Length: 315
Image 1 (cartoon, rainbow, N blue to C red):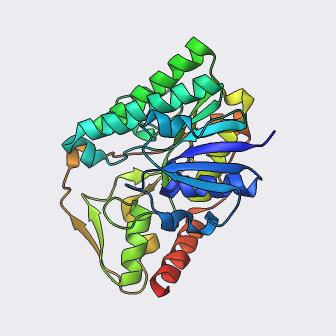
Image 2 (cartoon, rainbow, N blue to C red):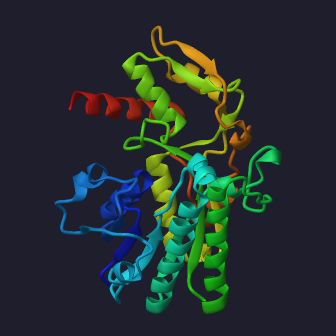
Image 3 (cartoon, helix red, strand yellow):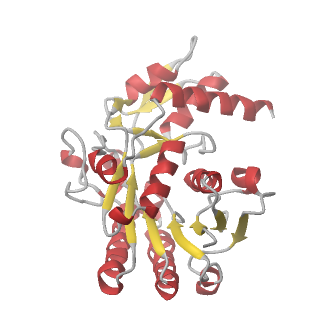
């Protein structure tokens, strides 16, 4: 057994942490990324490793994708996707093409080679109007954007391959993930944006009243969940959520990140219709099926991210 894993979206934020997790576990990784959102910088630490190879290409290209698969491949972790909610509202076609057509291409490659698939979805597929005390996998779905709709569509496609062809598929839905290598502009996550602004001495801008909450998962915990979920025989055919099980308001998050005399301001929300008021995961099933639990606290995660951003600024 050669222990080779195909990772699509390998040079993205979560992708690079998944690659790192796999390499540390002794796997050989064949990465695919079109670098529209990911970058060589994200995977620079691995590019000299014999066990890592990055192919620059489009997940919708059947030839490019099929060339990554052969009898030595044990699994595919599919992360390549367009992930911007606001952009999907402005350009739904590109999200459909990348997410739905791209996933179909990956599913066909997996079917032809009988390769198990870890499909990385999103918590944004859930009905956010009634999230109660935590969202588990039985929670109703209600995609509120073309992005979320495309992600739910590909989960259904993958389930069709599981039931129709007996393809080993696991659907993995991490909640809000943050950490080093995440973008710090508007396309980044709130933790990365706030921490970067605090380092720069700029005000932390909160959209709306700041009472909205998030369940924040550190990048290494997310990567561990994705790898373990993909390889677990008990998880095949299942949907699994990953989060800490605790949410924090954006106001409290800003207070936790702001240092010295960093100002915290509230600004009008530029797309209030897509705001999620409460986002809290119930990760009970992942613990039961995988024995997985998050290890990095929010305080520690912010500290690691701050140190990394400082080093980047000094580099």
